[in-house]
Amino acid sequence: MESIWSAPEKHMVEHMLQYAIVGSKASVAFQLERFIESTGIDELIISMPIHDADARLKSLTLMAEVREGLAG
Image (tube, one colour):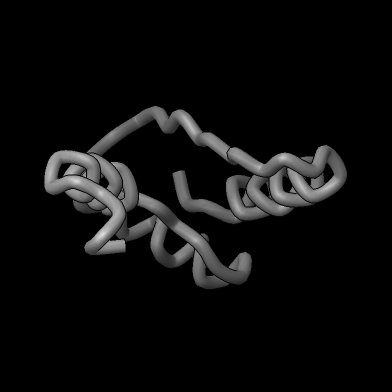
């Protein structure tokens, strides 16, 4: 990508991805719990930019299952 994007574009993408959480349900739950603990937030806005509607629904269902398992 170094030859394609500008320094500001690279910075923007890296900034956006610093809080990206990807992985299995267990991994996502772990990462999400650490994020909540470190920031003290009480609300999340989750974005799932998945083009395929079935895959997006599956991802949303998995996220709901993770949320149900979170402490608090």
